[in-house]
Amino acid sequence: MELLNSNIIGEGEKNLLILHGFLGMGDNWKTHAKNLAEKGYCVHLIDQRNHGRSFWSVDFSYKLMVEDLKYYMDHHQISSAILLGHSMGGKTAMNFALRYSELVEKLIIIDISPRYYAPHHQNILAGLVSLDFQVIRSRKAAEEQLSNYISDFGTRQFLLKNLHWLENGKLGLRINIEALKNSGEAIGQAVNCDKVFDKPTLFMIGSKSNYVDKNNDNHMISSYFLKTEMIEIKGAGHWPHAEQPNLFFNHLISWID
Image (cartoon, rainbow, N blue to C red; front, side):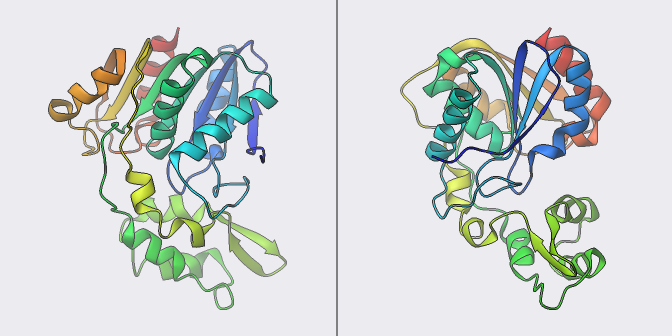
């Protein structure tokens, strides 16, 4: 197996592992990681396969991402951790906690439910596929190209964090777009497990997000995660940690502690 890339911040005895969302990377969480490190946590910002600086693979599923994380914890000799996941990372975290509950002390899921989600990133993926780095030589040119597919400025800026210089004058993407462009079904996969997780679990959802429907998703959430609390982050959409960072962090740290 290959080892996932991570950025480890802090030297506390309590390990806190963070899993980013689809098309993101661990470094999206760096500000929160620094704040958590000041509170005594050792924070692992992990890049999942085909993302960030982690390895590329044509194979992509939650089952594989769970085993990637298990290998990571074994490698770093982590026998117990708080696990936090956003969106796709939340699905990985849910699956991991159900499969390896003995390794997870507490579970924090950001704006995602265990249910199935139909593919809905087609425009974003088409925009990323359209980036021709034989022609595009600057971040500005890449943004102009993406704007043909993605109207939201914030979303474009988030995606552009995946750009990096392969060599002088040549840009590339950190994400494995060839593997990810057909991954809609794999990303949307429902959690399907015959186990339960009976340790403290927090679901944090954006009040303006449509990813979690409290009325319809509650039953499935509570059937898997027996000690669940749900906190709504006012004024936030699907990225509450980025849209309302102070409010998000205050809720997070008070719950963990």
